Length: 339
Image (cartoon, rainbow, N blue to C red; front, side):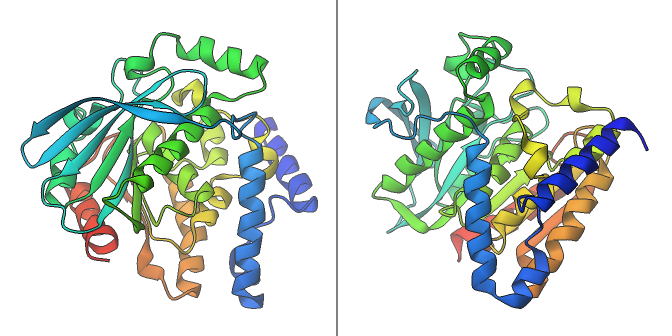
């Protein structure tokens, strides 16, 4: 048994003995579903505490509307947000023309790819590995908000490595600050008069996917999670010797003492969750995807919600295939548009 594997197991055993990494799973459900929910709440609090010093007491100022643009089937509002008291957060709100009454909401999290000049505009322009989603959300009447993440888009002044290191010195984590801004973005999205708070999705590819399942685990206002190409089991990633494959933002101090991928995603149960990944993607070792799937599906099945969890592998690298897009479209219709 290699050193990394031994170390991971030792950490897992110690944390479980301390009551942190203990899986909630079917045993807790058998005892009492309300107990399961209470355990989830405690685990969310613990997970949030690992994200470093966050400006939770900061009161955001009113966002500034920079301009509006009319596009085919939707209006775009360009906004400047004051979420964290440290730097402005540019964002775009897509308001479909066909909204009647309250509309489902979507928090769109952009990818990484090392393309620091691309942030929120991914919603409008897509990627070479994924067509744009703006026309989809406009057609389906989904109110959608996307922001520039730290170090991306209009926030790329400071490099990712410098930002990460400076935040550690200050007691913060880059990923924690990224997630914090997304949660504040969700606050704004739900404050809009068009928004239906009972239908709220989060979507992302790659880094955006990791954000999607973390945010869904931490924030129960999100009613369905849609993530593409980044369901990574940490243990399998270590065994594949590919920690270098993920950006520096990805690494949260002490995380493996208390959580792994499946126990983070367990905090989404029983809310609908679709995760589609590539079998030939170095960032998502297939055994790791299967490990998470095989852990989560029995939990949903126990609650009579087996169809509400779909975790699949496709024969592709780090990209969205047309058949993956079809699944996402069906998921949007079922859990946001028509629910």
